[in-house]
Image (tube, rainbow over all chains, first blue to last red; front, top):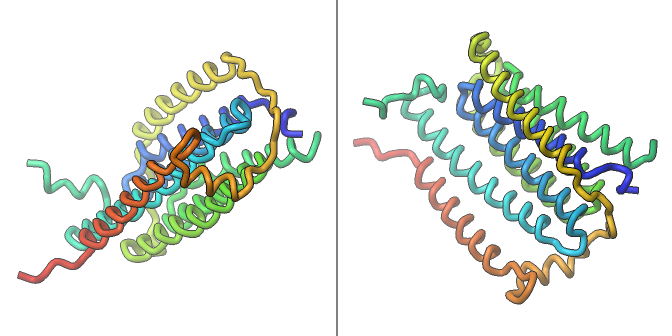
Length: 105
Length: 170
């Protein structure tokens, strides 16, 4: 049964995934890989919501719906971010965050 | 070891392994494929927790939609055979130290809290319940966030078309 696995196991997995995403966010230089790290972070938060919903409030569906809305927001965010990345690429011919700094005076 | 525990360890091991590969791989297309594996294993965890609708949404929207979008933009903006330069050792060490400190602190808090982890029911919410609560405005109704999300998606669609459109030559 599911009750053989404590809730904290899920939380530990999602915590590790969250901080791996933070590591990618800090060390990557390409805009698309930074976007992938952000997707990892959002996904780990979703695991947290779903596990809390299943273990602590099994008769309600709040965490379930919150994850659904987070997935929709992540889709919108990815679409806008990729549009911005393509626009940046068209202007500077690369998407390295350290070389796209013309807005700085 | 029961089948549930085995599934949990397999899925979480895959999630952690492929997350590390996603943020450390030096070929960008491989990083995107590793991200796909992470998202599919997360869908497996949702199936294990018996939220089948959410797992299906995760597979179609995340693994099917977002990863394909990311791969398209990779193909538009970089060369496939290109490898990233290795990151500096100083940056890597300091990022890893900060991340490890945060992770240890959070895990200690989570494990020390002692959640009451007794699952009363583990039944799958059926589609009728999900659909009715998405469109009801009473208690446990989610019609307002549903409508707000639809407006957000429309705005994001219009915005991404406007931003990515070619500028007119002056």
